Amino acid sequence: MTDPCAATRLPTELPSDPMHWVKAWLDEAMEKQVQRNPNTMTAVTVGEDGQPTGRQVLCKEFVPDPGYVVFYTNYESDKVRHLEHNENIGLVFHWDDFGRQARLEGIAVRSPPEESDAYFASRDWGSQIGAWGSDQSSPLESRAALIAQVGKRAMKLGVKAAGNLKSIAAKDRPVIPRPPHWGGIRVWPRRIELWIEGTDRIHDRARWDRTLERGDNDTFVVGTWTGTRLQP
Ligand SMILES: Cc1cc2nc3c(=O)[nH]c(=O)nc-3n(C[C@H](O)[C@H](O)[C@H](O)COP(=O)(O)O)c2cc1C
Image (cartoon, rainbow, N blue to C red; front, side, top):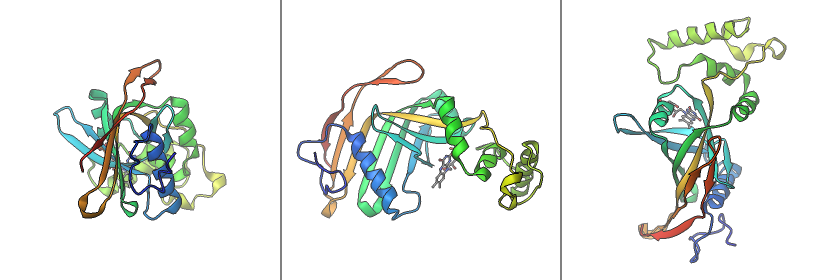
């Protein structure tokens, strides 16, 4: 099998599972840290008015078999509102230093609550409070109003001192539960495109498709990938 990280071209016989290629590229980008947040993906959703919009999110889990990726967010944010009305999502990774792009398109569902609980518990304490502090995507009067809101909510969670959370000693930090409106989004791709930069703009491109059949509890039975080489 061709090593995805050693390949400067897609093999003549296309790989049978592009998820493993994306995972290998992501792992290499994370390991070499040539850019900040190499796990950044542009996530594109479509609003109720039909307007597509993209924003960056961080890929926190990449499971090549059976094939889904996870990011975490506020379930009352615009992106999740969009997904409630249209479950289709596009994700794009771009690793400029490696001349690589990966596009994933598929269906978004919420992660199982236990998984979100476990990830939330692993987060930095300040970020845990931050998840309670912000009503992501809601209008805000001023930065000062946000700081006051975060402080007030921190006190409600049992934080004694207002102000700089970083200055609070570990022993004075109450355990922060996961907010019900915050958790993981699992994206199950049904289409993946890999792109490798070539000279004179003669890049290498191929697209794979598979079927997704909805099973129990927001999981999917996945079909096998079929690849097609594309002109750049
Ligand atoms: C590098 C980077 C990583 C980000 N990661 C996340 C993330 O993992 N989850 C998230 O909700 N927002 C993340 N954001 C903020 C989002 O881009 C966006 O501003 C926010 O989620 C609100 O989007 P929405 O109003 O479309 O829902 C990130 C922003 C940047 C620049």
